Figure 1: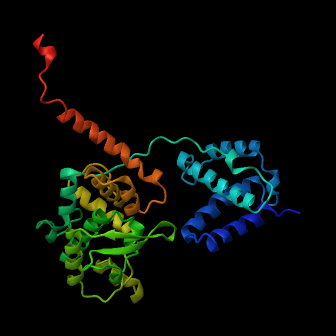
Figure 2 (figure 1 turned 60 degrees about the vertical axis):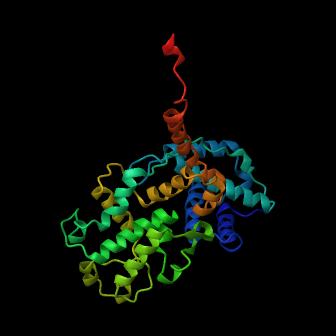
Figure 3 (figure 1 turned 30 degrees about the horizontal axis):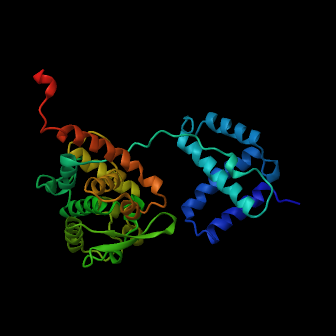
Length: 331
């Protein structure tokens, strides 16, 4: 007698945790997406009862679902539900549990992903903003006193993001001992608990060293808060020494983008995109960029080829055929 879907879901999550070594965040996502399907389908029902028609109705239900903010689910979020369901069905097939074939579920075709990046003067202005002399005197966005230490920290964060292409989650998880300034490289643990080597530019190395030299605390984290008001409000000493949050780094990047006069939205991921496109514009091959970004699939990295293709088109228009005489104009 086959087990219920809810029981099999629990075993699938345990399989992901133990045998596939998936991160807690990945397990949380699978639990959420598949839990939604099991709740919709019926937690006590059997896997052999899943049909093509059920999947069609489920997709329709997802498309009409309104989230907690009163908005319909985004198309890519609907796809995440289907990807999780396909993985679950593949696992069941591997265990010889009779159910619908995972190949029967087609994902929704998505438009090409937009890649937002900075180059040229925008990038230069952003990276320079924290250490311009006028900003060392005060926070230009709030008129509050801004310490030299905070400016050094923010400068080091921006340079490190652009130098390495780190995800913001990877950056906030760094400890002082993780960084080898002498070797100008270090290992970071990325998505799926996969490690990769990232490399420091001379600028990133210099400003990390300046920042660490200026710090007087003995905390273990590479980037911490230097807001005295917040620290005064926190009674727990361990909490005072906590690392910056992802949201804090996002605010830091957005603040200096505003100061630099950049009108479009800039996030830590914008600097990751800028890192990748800078490498490709410089002639790096896409496989190397894939490795440096920590992408499991080359397909993910190929989103950047659309950007570089457009740039190559601009270069072609600007420089091609300039040495030829216009024959039409001579007629």
